[in-house]
Length: 354
Ligand SMILES: O=C(O)CCC(=O)C(=O)O
Ligand SMILES: [Fe+2]
Image (cartoon, rainbow, N blue to C red; front, top):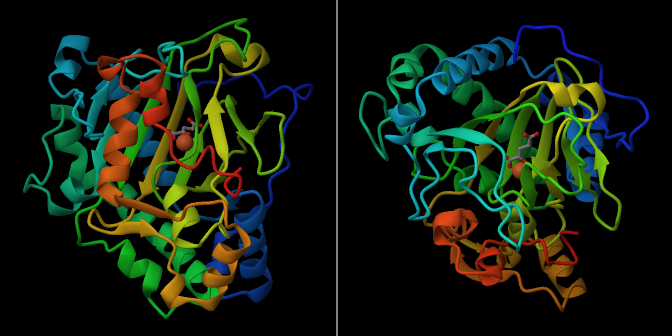
């Protein structure tokens, strides 16, 4: 729970030493830091981001999450995301599978779309619990705007580094066009002494969209970096966000940007005695954008695609269809066997993304 003293992250578990990028330097155009960011994105697909300037907005979102998750389950269920493939709204603990066998997840989610927040009080996709509605202007809107600023700065750099015409990735993630971009607050109950491999709380996955701007307090996030076979934790560092590349950027870039597989397991050591909270802003492409490598727009991407003849970068899916399919088949309400898990997969099978 935010605001109380928590045990330290243990020093005897395998932990990634991810690169740390200074957002202030990146924003100011510091070439060495921009190169550092690029290196992280094309190797690990994960990095820490410091000096992002969103601390206050993050704290306010955690408070809103605590207020909302404290509502009676019956009230929260009035805003359930449902089985149609729509992500926005509430997801109860156990609503999703974490593996092909259909083991239920151990997290509750509150997903609020960028479109509903920016258009408020107009409703674009759906309504939310009263706590959220009351806080959209003062809490959710500032968090969404800060997150968009951070992620769009990164997209601008990727556009340049990929040799794409100016504005390309920013236009594919337009602030004012409908998309699956959303903020997510996550809470998991304490799980003391659980064997981590047996009991993921969020199953192994690649992110469905383009970029995640993640804030977590306790450990539990584990990443399988490209080319590695051993899971290792990402240790939360106060004031540092964790950023990662999702499937859509891997596809647009013809495999240059890496969408790494990750999962959430119970917090390690004494941290397992506590509730785990995290907050994410996901930037996802415009709904109508087809997910395919941008080969016509960049010789660098064209070359990359040629290097991976076994990988299909023509998904034949719009961003909306991709997102909806993955969301839908994770839901236990849609489960018909292990093929449902397979239907929820993105680039996890893809040797470039791994
Ligand atoms: O809670 C975390 O640390 C990660 C959550 C995550 O990977 C997701 O929601 O996609
Ligand atoms: Fe994720």
